[in-house]
Amino acid sequence: MTKADIVDKIASATGLTKVETEAVVDGFLTTVIDALKEGNNIEIRGFGSFKVKKRKGRVARNPRTGEQVMVSEHFVPVFKVSKELKHTVDANLKNTQPK
Image (cartoon, rainbow, N blue to C red; front, top):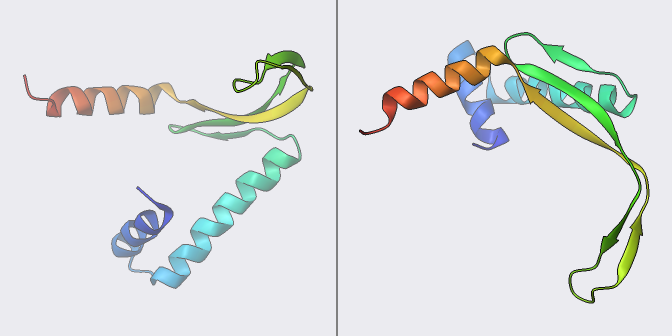
């Protein structure tokens, strides 16, 4: 599912235009990105949480040359799914899978 698909689905469910819906979706994504860039965590109950984790520096290997490369310490965004969402997805897919 792409961002355009999400916009279409929300627009048809809410009665908003696609342009208005796209502005809302873009605003949401920008807000999440800005919060993570500032080091803040975001928790959406029933959906999950976005956090920034610090990865230690390490020695890695270039797969083409086999040469060792130093990867410096860096920060990565992570998403943790809520228990409710995990359970809902699991239960729904178990019910729709052929036996």
